[in-house]
Length: 133
Image (tube, rainbow, N blue to C red; front, side):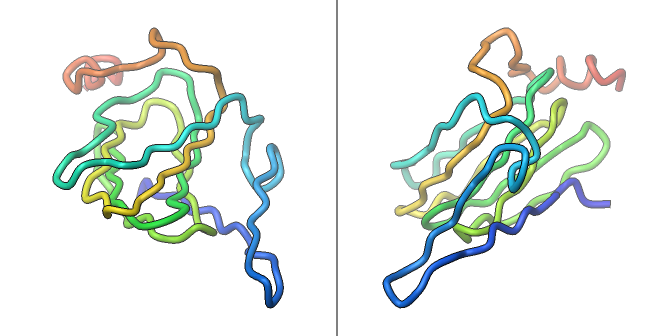
């Protein structure tokens, strides 16, 4: 069973172009308390390498592409994010890594909580211990 849960965001628009609407508790499965984006990632650099104790996120690559790996301590799944109208839901206690950023990648992340450093698990062995593995 894959850890990848996709959300399709309908692209609206006309001959002028397209628009994607992201609505909390409608198209996004939680109330959005924080929005951030990752851009300008240097070639060969990877990001993430952490989990959250209590945080849900949706990741959307609004331009370019990157590869994401999700790990629940038992299995790892990976997906290519490369569409502005598809996102991946990442729930709590899931290790995440982002790799292979294209030069033009902008990765938008919607989060269910405000930033809280104490919510991060930044050591994979600690992550495994929390899960009881």
